[in-house]
Image 1 (cartoon, rainbow, N blue to C red):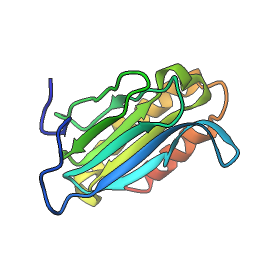
Image 2: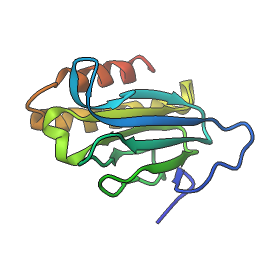
Image 3: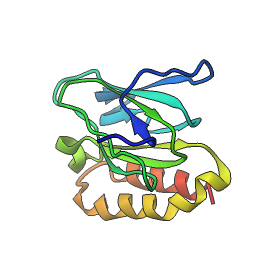
Length: 148
């Protein structure tokens, strides 16, 4: 089921940008991470989640009201078109205990501010399940709280 918030379709707008989030085992001294972990995009942009290493997939755990919570198959790339302004928080479920978590901010200012409390809550609720790299969750929360 897809809504206007996120759809699994090609980008049709000439002004929309395409972004890539890599799912990695290692990068810059860290393990089990999304790169970048926090991404700012404009409404209508597309984001491709690309598994660089095996055993990764992405699952949205929070999305703006009315937006689709996307999920990929393991070891498969996923492209989503994000039209609904707000915050999308996602994890790699097999690696959540290592804080493999990320967020996408779609839009800026007043269109995003109302989504901050719910997105922050979703990250904080998962924090106790993160046995290592918990500072990643705190870094995401800090970035989200800067929107206020």
